[in-house]
Length: 146
Image (cartoon, one colour):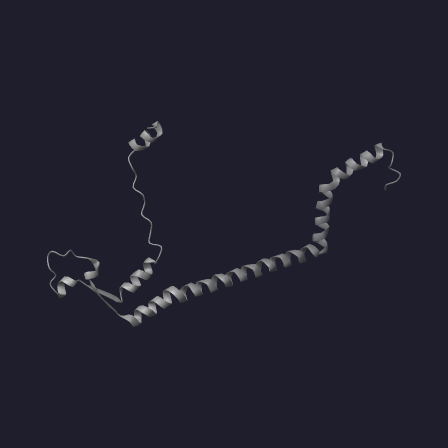
């Protein structure tokens, strides 16, 4: 047996967290619970003592109309509306981004914005232009360039 395995076995085991029931939301289950009435089978009839109690011995009385309405609204209509709202939100966000880009482009087309942009570009490229001008002068080609 390896040393690592012995160390792992010597450590106290931490119980794993139980996973939540992801099949149905808890809100949905509590909403449905109002329409389902479960009665114990022992109160209705006698069961021989040699049989053990199972969940199948319980009797459920279901109010079908409200149950189906709740099922339809919670499982079909609500996700549909949620998808529609997320879709509209995405379209609105894309539209706002386009309006922002258009406004920014219009601001850049104004003469003052263009002048400041060109001045910033000239400041960025000035060292490179000076270096190129120095090389041209050293090569004796300055008369060819203005």
